[in-house]
Length: 360
Image 1 (cartoon, rainbow, N blue to C red):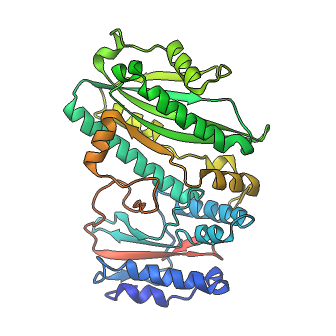
Image 2: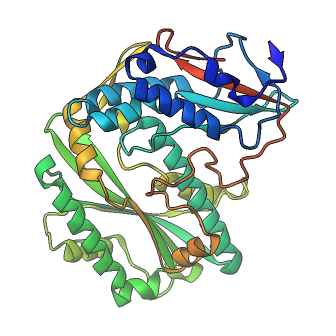
Image 3: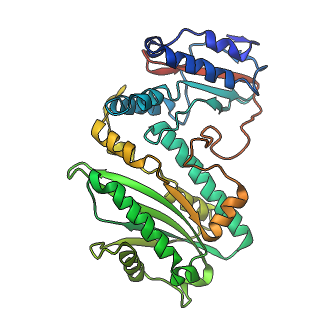
């Protein structure tokens, strides 16, 4: 059914089972619905269609995984658990004449352990890194890129937080070296942590995108693989580190911008891999390991996960991007473009906890 009705109509839909059992969740959803009508108040709204959301993003899978994490989180932090459970309960899409859908409003919990928000943050990182590289390239045409991965031996959960602090301190020391500054124009650093189920240990490591001049590869300031390993060992004060990975990102003449996009994709990952602690039991059910979820949730709290430096930081600041690590980051408009679309109708989807589907 298509009617020209106010956006607030959706607040009259019957609450889900979860919202009925927890009235404060219902109130929070109603308040968010009010914030969704700012731009699209007068658009006709599709309702009572019973249509199941079909979208390339696969919102349903993310919602099921987030629900699993919420249940696991409930063992250690009920407030965060409820916030994650409520994440993505309401999605509003602008629909163009051609039928193209674009997310224009949604509630995201922005919790660092929420799979849906992790994915949205990684998209923000991808676009920010890509745009910073394009901006840098416009000023310094000869810019080339390296991917550097810095690792440390696996550690226990009890030692993980201190190890991350050591790594950040070591990177700060390494990037201040005269040798580094002579060779590297700018950098972007992202922390990733993987979990080894067999040994029940964690593997923190840095993915670093390095911007260098074209002459870097033939000049006297070139840093080879062995020297990178030595520099990282010295910075970490740990001779047990046995490997680093460094490789050049080469341009693809067949695809414009592919080098920069490939670089951004490599470092545009989030700090944890949901597959490390979420297991698929059936088509409609996932389960998360409460111990791993609880440990990572506590360890990642208040930690900065990404950083820019050198000329890349200058261009990042010039572009005035959102801070991806903050709760104020926009997870709807992930590409940095305007969230307004040439929409002719508004289509709203609510998560149906019984059907485990987004229904219009």
